[in-house]
Length: 259
Image 1 (cartoon, helix red, strand yellow):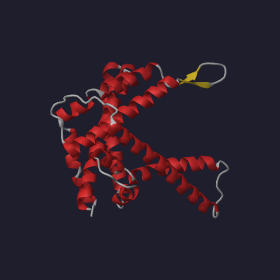
Image 2 (spheres, rainbow, N blue to C red):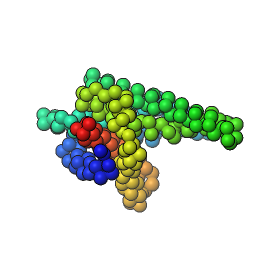
Image 3 (cartoon, one colour):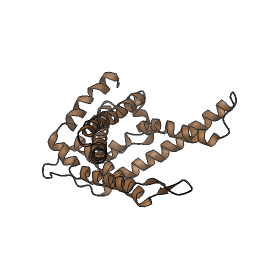
Image 4 (tube, rainbow, N blue to C red):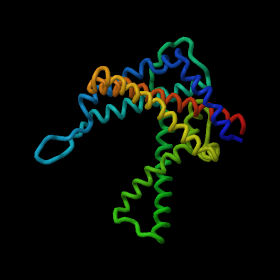
């Protein structure tokens, strides 16, 4: 049975994985500069900007939106997959830098991620609809019920994502895992895992905020925003992804070995 002590004990190999400098350089040496350049480009060509016209409106730069969404999705998902493969199969001693490539395993991995998001969105929407229907019998909901429905769906969607998250390391390990088995594996630990995932996002980003504050006092606000907003944010995102992927892989291995 997985308990809180087990979940906390897996933090040690997770952080050891990330603090291995050679492995960390291998994973981010290519992705970090690319993400930083894309973020730097978005600083000069913002995806959304307020147009200075008589009538207030937003200018949308669809090219930059597609560049941000595409590059981040591709690179972060590739790093996530490679991280979990290293946990399962070990390091590749012949390669010094990880260059993401869209092979068959990556295709299956990203397809599993898309299915998880779609399934979680549908389940979250059904849950919110039933909840709103129940509440409607006792309370009067606002006129804009579609806004409440949309907000509720977005709010509860991460819960269902966590419930199915083990399908991703299963693909990385080359092992079949049904939806029901993924749901069952995450029972009783889903809230704790969600908190740990949020922790893995919070710690690197907090370090970037501290770094940004220090740079702002030394080199000025504008340069600090450009530097921290590109290299700092890209680095924190990669570290967060590696932490989450490694922890998920270790937890999947532990639960699989006990079942």
